[in-house]
Image: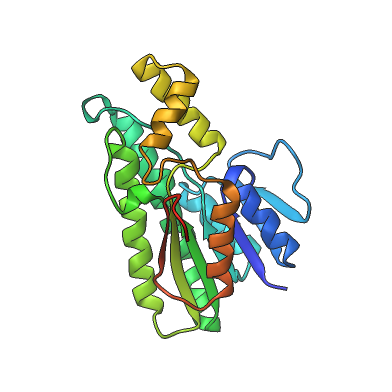
Length: 236
């Protein structure tokens, strides 16, 4: 039985990925900064702050060999560049980029030694293009896309693959918080804020968690390396 680690694996997209991996027969460990509100059938939840180098090293040492790593932990936010605080900037970089770096670094040598492994990073369409009011978020996602490209280059020709999934806005608690922030910033009500957010996507809709899970599982099941799957709400 292969061991899969999903960061940010107890809520939203990560929770759905964890449960899907468990249903496929993998030994799944979901990492999060707090215990899950609801149990995850067939999934072991562990506390680990992926921005903390010591915690990551200790956690992965305790887990042992990892066959699948899904870098999913993330934070979002929106603000005008002139209003973006250094705290917001550092938080986005730490969780979205440094967390993926630390976790990938923890597993990569073992995967290469065994000549087998799958790494999928849940990035964002903001990692391949820019948009207004997301300086910290977009920069962190561009960083993690750069990291994933480097990893793909380093494992090219081996039994290890590194790929990414880049969704536009997904219907999660994080997106609900983003909608609320838009409402606060603009004076719109929540329905108007959601409509404005959907309008800002390439195909005018917020995508569903199941679409992200499907894309992640396809990459884990295949042997592609260096793929960047953009989920922009359009036809596949």
